[in-house]
Image (cartoon, rainbow, N blue to C red; front, side, top):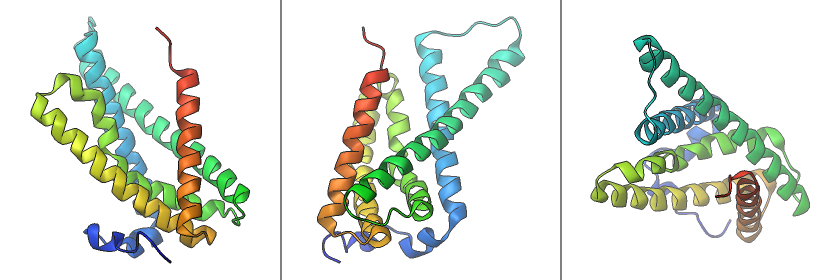
Length: 184
């Protein structure tokens, strides 16, 4: 396999062990959902503080609701990405092995955790925001490299076809996001 073969040297964990571990994939998606839920809660608290008569509602129930919503959205997003990857794999001549794609995308969430924290960039010190953007760039590059390699292995794709599948998936997901994003 050509391209991205040095990704194992850049990642401090053994990718072969992660690939074989279904638990790591589930935990990665859950952690991504928790990070997204907490970031969303903090962002909403800063923009529009919630006032409740009961302190239990404000300190326990509402944050827990945001976290559970974040985890649910992470798993729903994962299913959507698996569906799109399956369609792209079939379109590009791959076998479209859904089980392998499901675990690959779950493990891929490990590399995209800083995206959930980007919700907080307006509330952080500028240097922290810049460091977070740098983390997003580095983690995204590692994640794309990992997904390229995994698509190549699970779908018998060349590096070029794997990159095309990822680009088409990103374009599709961004276009769906743009359609549901409130205008104004």
